[in-house]
Amino acid sequence: MPPKHPVRPARAGSSRPMITPEVQVLLQNFRLENVPSHLLRRAHFKAEEIFANTFSRESVTPRQKAALILLHQDPGLSQNALAERLAMDRNTVAEMIKRMHRGGLIERRPSPTDARAYQLYIAPAGVELLCRVMPRDATVEDQLLARLPEEYRSLFVKCLRLIADDEAPVKNDGRSAA
Image 1 (cartoon, helix red, strand yellow):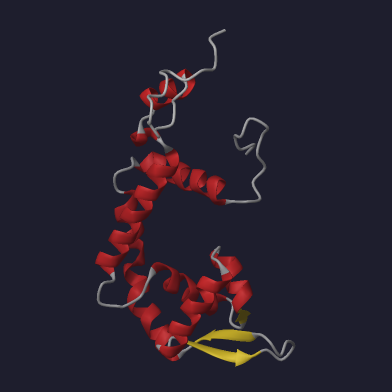
Image 2: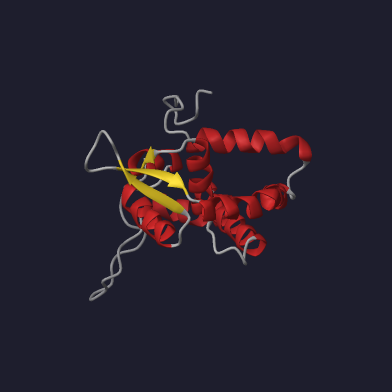
């Protein structure tokens, strides 16, 4: 068994940390282009770019569009419920809601059951915005998936759901049980 000592001794006055042989091998074999988290980040940026190009004149973000759709489907959601459904931090959603309210896209009404909470509703301007963007929404997804063969697309979306779903069971080896 090789000793777990640094590859080379530290030079006098050197503040550079020592690299073990095991770490050296890991560093030599590391390929960023094969790292799932890096690839997901790049794919996310590509999706954001496609969305921005498609809806550049609408002044709406993907998260704002998603919030408007959820409020259309489920009027009166609380801010916390909306944050949970969007899988976003509550503070981030609070700031987004303030901007959307100032922009006239949503209405905030006091909750009849909780004096500290508001119920959120899509405003007429929000409905008008959805009427403009929804007919073009599928083109964003089509452009994003265009590089994948047709037969892989539903599997790709299923795999993304497995990764994104906090409730999906995971085997002891770190792989999804689904």
